[in-house]
Image (tube, rainbow, N blue to C red; front, side, top):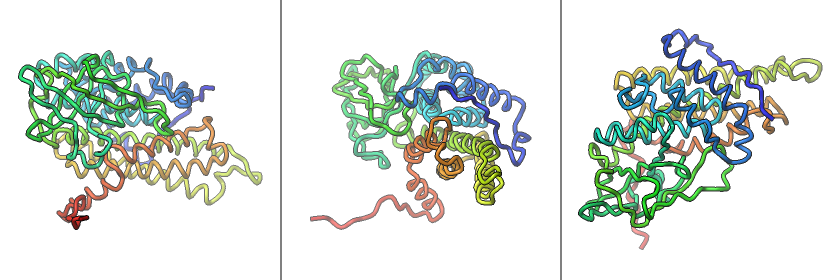
Length: 400
């Protein structure tokens, strides 16, 4: 049964005063669309472990696909605050929906725009912006997640084409994506981006089943068995690990905003429930421990809102560092997970049902806290920025 969406966004520090009228119009349009098209159906699709593909066109219409891509390529030409606000509204509905938009925008459209040539931009970006075409991003491999430099996927120059072999896993959108931006090593060991199109012989995308998290998002593998890639499909303007990491900066920025949406949804539901649920002849919101939970939720949401707003300003000025983005991604997801768990307690037994959103958000966030840089890896990125010492790799004794 569809839930009635009564969501009201918390804004304890009047952050709306920091937004332009355009920002608020974009956010409100996304919020209205989510309330009409997503929240009434999301629990059903989550239980079925199915992505609602009928919403792709609507995601394109609200500017969720490549909002910052220039208008000449089909994007909306918006700033980073607008991108963040849209991601916040989408993840308020469900992390899987935000993931689909985030992958399309930051991991597919972004590299084609930044690292591709004019022919590639004009061929792919307009269709990706409308949702007519869907993309995915192939970096993570079965044995190489936090350490992508060890990737095995590789390609050879065969004269008139490249021959691609290898496999990627945990790929959002993979089962139905029309194209994949795949990162692979050349014969010289240099990482390059290649655009792989569905229908190329030897390219398959088996779906990943059995997920308890991101169930309303399609996840799969990318398998390459002697796939012939036209030379025109190599992204020519950037190579090396910095290329995919640049895409991840944009995606992590979207997550930093998006996860706050999950937290806001759980907080909003908790405030309403605390005022309505009667125990010992009074609303449970009258009890000190409930008020403590609500006050701490609102405090953390407010701090996170201020952090991502400032980060957005820095990104608009092209001054944000990867480490700053990393800190914001980790913080937003961390506070969102804690808020979801506290909200579940406020709702008592009802909190485990699909009548309320906490358990779905909580299970989703267990993926978000891991993908695009795990919680611990982001802490080490901050630690490296503080000390100048990388803690990722150590000289270990030879096991022999």
